[in-house]
Length: 265
Image (cartoon, rainbow, N blue to C red; front, side, top):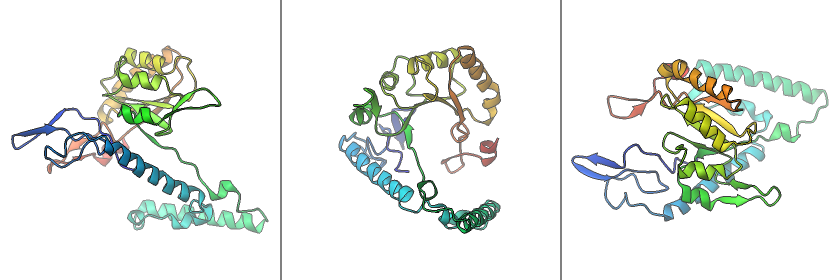
């Protein structure tokens, strides 16, 4: 919502027309323009990213609690890109049914200004990637004595940040946020069990979410092995499918895309 300010990269360098420069690592680190000056890491970018993220969250809070999320506005939540589609028609049908139910409740004398009818909750999440940024936003909760990374509610590690002896895992081991572990078809079942043990030594329910991002071709082959290993270890986790990552292909124009049929599988 606020922008992917930090990007994990497979290659440290990017080459164009025989010129090699450091890879673009997100606006938190450097700039996308392909020139030497833009690719130099700039710590001031973290401050700008924080300011923009805070502004975005404040706007979301205003929408969530200022009446925009009220059930009475459900027919106004239509998005232009679904307006003339089958999905848009189904949404409008549901919205009208909600309106009818609200009208019945009002006629029966039930109040419509209860917070549950007027507001909504939301949570934020991102990859724990840029450790100086995450460390700067980590706070000690005086009531519980636990440390929380306040950059997001939910933090996760991926292919390039979930090494058992890595700094990212060591950092997340010390915070009380709920955590995600993104796993691809390359994940070894024994390694996943060990990683969960490190991040959730007390096997606390709700602490760990395993996010499978394997692609349509590998999901049914690779995922069962991971599930069996985690169950055999008696570990309590939530399983979530990420149908976007893992289904990526490169279009003829060179841009990355995902076939919708693969996402639906």
